[in-house]
Amino acid sequence: MSPRSHETAVLIVGAGPVGLALAADLGWRGVSCLVVEQGEGPPDHPRASALNARSMEFMRRFGIAEAVRAASAPEDFPHTALYCTSLNGYEIARIERPEHGGKGATTASPERPQRCNQLWLDPILRDLAASFARVELRYRCAFAELTQSRDGVLTTVHDLATDERYRIAARYVVDCSGGHSPIRRAFGIDMSGSAYVGHHLSIFVRAPRLWEHHPMGKAALIMFVEPAGLWRNLVMLDGRELYRFGISGKAFFDAPVSVDADGLFAEVVGKAVPHEVLSIRRWSARNVVAERYRVGDVFLAGDAAHLNHPASGLGLNTGFGDAVDLAWKLEATLAGWGGARLLDSYEIERRPVGVCNVGHASDTYDTDRMRRPHPEIAQATEAGAAARRTLGEAILRTQTRKYITDGIALGYGYDASPICWREQSPAPPLTASEYRPTSYPGSRAPHAWFAPARSTLDAFGRGFVLMRLGAAAPDPAAIAGAFAQRGVPLSILSVADPAIAALYERRLVLVRPDGHVAWRADAAPTDPSALVERVRGGVYSMESEPRSQAMP
Ligand SMILES: Cc1cc2nc3c(=O)[nH]c(=O)nc-3n(C[C@H](O)[C@H](O)[C@H](O)COP(=O)(O)OP(=O)(O)OC[C@H]3O[C@@H](n4cnc5c(N)ncnc54)[C@H](O)[C@@H]3O)c2cc1C
Image (tube, rainbow, N blue to C red):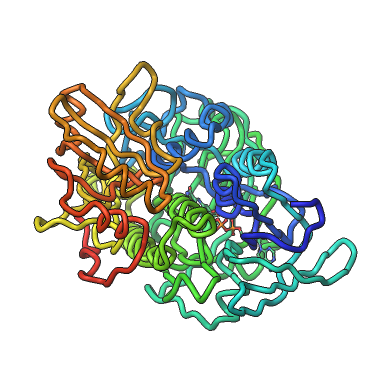
């Protein structure tokens, strides 16, 4: 694409983390795309920090996991979630997350969850996206309107630097413009879910070595419990001196300039400590999902498609999942090996994940929000101690699933997808905290080391991979022939290791370019053409309802 080309295969509106990740994935696949962003560049005020293991696996495929780790909180900074009355008051509960942060694999993944705020993550993603010859980023360029025709989408943008308006012709448009999406609104797409609307202030604070001013020790997330409820929190950003101090309430939201941020900060610390308020921003929270993720050749991804309260750290992670699901389908469709229905499967696969994650965020946030602590919660009385004990037990019982979400991060699947080969037996149930590896069609293919420092996941990304597992794996020739006939890229990976064969549960497992299982069996299929037709999104019909969203 020439530097000022007004034509592109994919136009991405919004260079937030999801738009940038999509651009990077498309660039990695050699698909040309143009990103228009109304702002000047990455944010100067903190938002998301929590990257789950699945997002880190995407970073690994992009080759930036090390850079993200280096920009994350120091390896030894504990990812503890702490509840207390104030940092110099009483501890109420703490949830440890020893498998988060630092280097080294877990049994479930080659990557650990990290805390890398968008202050540092977005520039890494921007530089990665910009490094691909076929990706162009245009900042200070706002989406204005679009029209669709049989040939694609004609979008009018406003160059805010020159005040010029011009049109961009694209085959597809992906709306990554965030919660206020002008495209979703123009299409009149409703958001459904909880009626909750939360009003918050985010206060960016520098407080060097804050942990030396209180006895609670280091913690990544600190929730302050007051007689009136849980309305303030402190989120560690760099593990050294930077924090996001959150306060909730419509009165604060309506009049941010009159907020005594220094006084409120001293209250939660429990005494005056050296600090500096760097910036204050308002934000509102909702727990809703768009009714549609696609209108014609326009797709919604990230916050444009789903919004949730960030307390369980799911918004950005869910958005990355959207980008990764869509990127290979766009590549396949543009290259001609994707079937006519492939792009339909984006909404079918990703919307249930959005509903599930938003539901989890909503439930767990509401559980804290609705708490009415005992009036003596912060008092040095027997009743105060009893109230703290009772509340601490309730928090541990109900909120561990808010902070430990390995099941959500790694266990989500597309078992009801029309491009996965569903089996007679039901898909394994999804649980929020615990991930159980499975190769059930639709699931993320499990991680195992099949060579030094080489995860099974490292084999996925470009085209489909047919895994032959164990010594008795069937001949893949018929499948390979059917794929070749349709021009669908396929590579064969033979893994003799019996432990990996047991983990993968079948002798043949077909993995999609996004690392999800499309099909598995112990014998070669009788009709390999039907298999390739299904997984490439050729003609299909919806056979089943998506699995239940209820999650223990
Ligand atoms: C305080 C806070 C803490 C959070 N913590 C977490 C967390 O720990 N983990 C997590 O997973 N999520 C978290 N989130 C949510 C996370 O920040 C969002 O889910 C994420 O930023 C969504 O990314 P996005 O790219 O979809 O949208 P955005 O980040 O909103 O980016 C959208 C971009 O589109 C641009 N845009 C908008 N309109 C136009 C237009 N007309 N033309 C051109 N460009 C346009 C905007 O300028 C913006 O840059 C948090 C959110 C908040 C507010």
